[in-house]
Length: 304
Image (cartoon, rainbow, N blue to C red):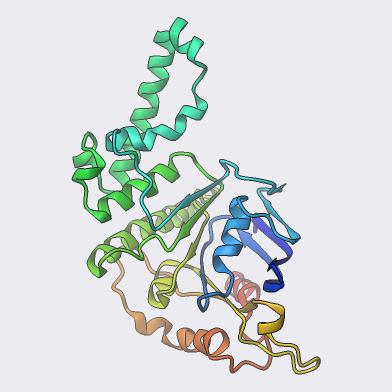
């Protein structure tokens, strides 16, 4: 059964007189790893901020886990390209910091110190377990200044995951990293994807729903099981309207081949899909905008 975790209805947005997004409609299934790609200026970050709740849309609605997004909420986590670690806290303290939302007031900490201390130890234990999963158990008590860029981004991923978000947003999280480090961190995300597959195999709800913005197409197809392309490079043959006038629309939406964490990086498996994506999203050669929006049909075919 497909459990919808994100629903976007008629999402449109303007900056002044310039229309950025035009009538985006989208349903995301729990457990999907979705890559959002498109040319610069297509509105990917605008859509991200709307899902996060920091920048409301001019038109349309967004729902996460059945609740309308009206502002930032802990149900939606985010990892940015820039690191968000406090320099005065150790790695494990940084990761556990968000759980202070579950802690109690200062008077409670003062007068019920023992209960508060036990809760804090529980949070630090959760942080250590997550850091182990992302490969940072050797540096639990180190401070951010002692970490490489890749290590800091691993910690940022753990920082987001510890809040158990319904949806995790990744805003070009590896864009500032060298290629080798980027590949290592892609492996971390593939491990999360494999955890989804393992959960589904025993009848459980997949724990991770991820939406990632990236400009790297190989990364999109390797990490995601669904790739969505939005673009302003379209023209309506009936009305003559174009994306430059009306804003970006979804022009590509397909399933991708699944790669396990230990599978070889055989990018030839999705070469044809990547060429279709370029044609429909980057080159503006598409006459039928629905031609490459086959995600739901692809899912049904697999289910049969």
